[in-house]
Image (tube, rainbow, N blue to C red):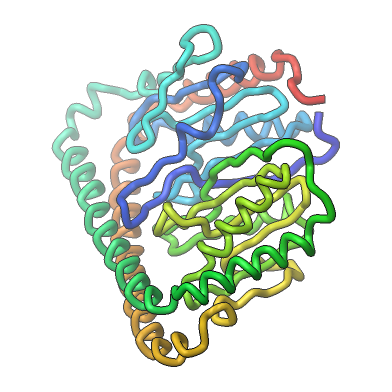
Length: 361
């Protein structure tokens, strides 16, 4: 059991230029997990509340809990994992549909839809249909704005990515590796992928608490010139080659490029953006750009960045409308849900997880 309680949070889904991108299939290995619970049920049936109840009880018992936040609504949960018990729970509904791989053995369904008063909901079905359609219609508009924002960023940054710039970026990465690592471990490290930030109805949300919990030291990257992904790619490979496990955190806008790296074994972070309460070293990607390319492209870069930020702001507004419509939908459902079912399930599941043997000493 953990000596101290930690608060570790990630996103596993992103509202990106590619649409909704999911990392849920990479989250847990269902071949080795002891208990994997998939919650089914629509809006307002208590999925997030159930997971919060189980997580709170496990923390009171002294166990570390990993929280998965919803990129549609960061105040809501999409999943929890208790590593020392080899147990996890997930909202298995769209858009991140998940099912147990080994049903009945290690995988279990939780049907909170059984708590609906179906007769009462049938009576307001037209209102429910309208709310669902209004909610869903916001996302394609949001994705178009996010995609256009990425395209604007790419246009402004492309002229800066010369061969000289990339060579200088690789050299900086090697210098950082030499500073931070005094030796090489046997074998190659293992890479994991999690989103540390996401574009949400609340704007761009960075889960700073996870960095503060896992890493005492680190670097913050001011990425005006769009080279953070290149620098972090060089660093990721360097740490893996030297035997260190890496949590690579893709960009929420452009999931094909890393935006942050966490190396928990070294208590070391590389974060694009600011992390409150830390005294991390600073890296400005402008210092990596070949000088003539920077002089020639700086004004266009600034314009492209401003356009991108405005487009992203518009995308967030569409996500906020989606949240408003989802709140309306939940308001329709809530009076017709038996929440005692979620309370009973939380108590039963907690007992089941606590009865499992610890998997980490």
